[in-house]
Amino acid sequence: MSEIKREMFVETEEATFGKIIEAVQNMGETGATIDDLSRSEHLERHTLSKHLNRLRAEGRLCYKRIGRAKVWFVCRAPLQHTLRLGEDEKTYTEKILTHILSDIPEGILVLDFEYTILFMNQYLIARYGDLVGQKYYHAFFGSSHDDHGKMGEIIEGKSEEVQSLAKDKEGRILNIKARKTQNPDGSFSIIAIIEDVSEKVRREERITHLSQLHRLLGESVIRAYTIEQLCSSILENVREVIGFDMGDILIYNPENKTLSGLARRGYRTENDVGEIEKWKEEVAMAAINRQAPIIFEFKKKEMGTRRDDECGLARYPPDSIDTIHEVYAVPLKTKGALHGVLLILMMSGRTLSEEDRSLLEGVSEGIAGGIAKIKAEEDLRLKANALEISSNPVLMANMDGKLTYVNPAFLKMWGYTRKQEVVGQACTAFLNHENEGNVLLTVVHEKGVWEGDLSGVRKDGSVFKVRLSASLIIGIQGPLQFVAIAEPFVKGG
Amino acid sequence: MVSTTKAVMVVDDEPIVLNVTARILEAKNYRTIKAKNCQECLDNLKEEVPDVILLDLMMPGLTARELLDKIEENERWSKIKIIVLSAVHLPEAEENGLLASRQIVDFVEKPFTARGLIDAIEKAITN
Image (cartoon, rainbow over all chains, first blue to last red; front, side, top):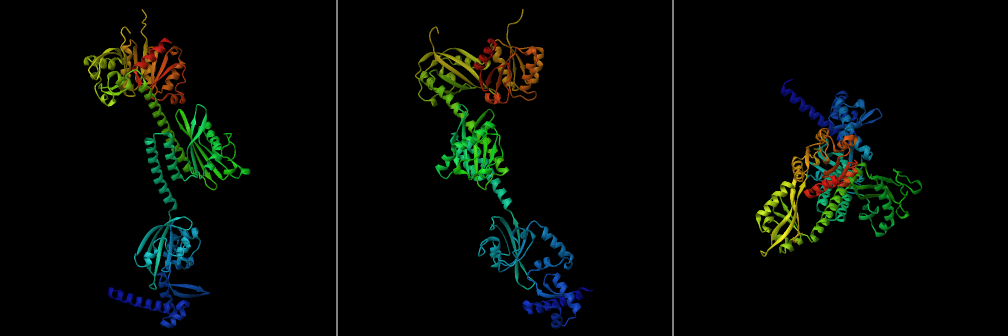
């Protein structure tokens, strides 16, 4: 067939199709049988049947079976119509499309411009039931008007295509992508692809929270000067991520084997705290004794169960707090020391996931490390205090011989008032003979120790005899500093 | 004539620490034997038995714990006194069972002073 002839044929066929659709439309809501159309369009039944099937395959017309007869309508939801056809009535393409729409792990929804649901696929039916005929905003969001998602933008002609995240009436987070589409009768519909992204969004939120928590944990460990400050800030951050009901950090005293509460979150009243304090200590002590995390699960009192029954713990929480459902006790442990317990309490109907528990174990290591660091710093400050109050002058110098530390007794003996006047100066500057100082440094460097008498020079220039005992300080990778202790020179001493 | 100079074997994988420590002890008239790991210590022991071993705990290869076990098992080495010299804190070392050997007589934490080290060696030899 030549190109001109083919175009004429297509035009003629399209004109015939237009007339058939118009005729079906004119029949109104009752629809048109093939006899009605044959009479009105003066077409033979078999020609008309061929045209009607073409129009159906194109989604422009659809039919309902009434007995053996087919009643034809202008199709407003071609997809819905196609999927409701029997398998033997579908074309090959329609069968494939049906399978794809059934199996696709996303929801397909068709709405008219009055928000009425015309079609929903298996994915959505499995989650919401068959809501065809209902208003979209009510069926999905329990709302009386569309304020969820951006379908209104399409209906109002502001957009052809929209995408939004919305929370449905059951708390699912839906990713909705919707597009305007023209129907065979000239009206418009919206085809939306809906994906339940609750899990994905929650996981992303959790990852964000987790990375924030790790950052905050690190910052807390670096910045906290007291154990209380550290525990309070970490507990607060952990609560934001895990959403536990109540949480405590109890500090362990190995001397008298006791625990005392240091930080707590989630308690509404002081009464809540008082009632269970002893019981919590008992739970925490069980974790200390075991030196491993313990989980307790409580049901009704008479049916009380524990996942772990090896710790000899009183079985139930006190009467006033029997709504506690689960307790997770994680010892705060570093190598060589037990510092306390992280205690997480969940109320009725709530439970910690495996993920939460492993996060708590990780956090507990961070807390324990932080506590150990603060204890070590406190210990160092304590020892530094001993140097500060020592009546013997003490000085420290780096490997270049520059002073890094002097104690008040040094300042007194050398006639200075402030450490800043001295620290950073060469230690030889405080001796009457610089070469004596250089010998001292060389000997300490070579032999590790030096002891002897030297002449010191005070700030006012006066000279005095002093006995000095110096030693090299050696670190993991080698010599670090010199330390020396001075004492007043006693003749014949 | 039998030498009365006491011998100390220094075992440390950090060359500077090894050399500085040996130099300090030599200045105090100790004879030193150097070993840069536990295997080398074990090899040296087959040749010569020192009075004291100054042992770093954390070294690659044969572990300090394995070395301590081998020393304990050998009758010839049962008189050696061992001073642990380590950046590992005492409670941590105890918890990990690193100080279980009866031959360990002292524990010196790094950083340490040369004076403290000399005192520890003298104490070990005197006792």
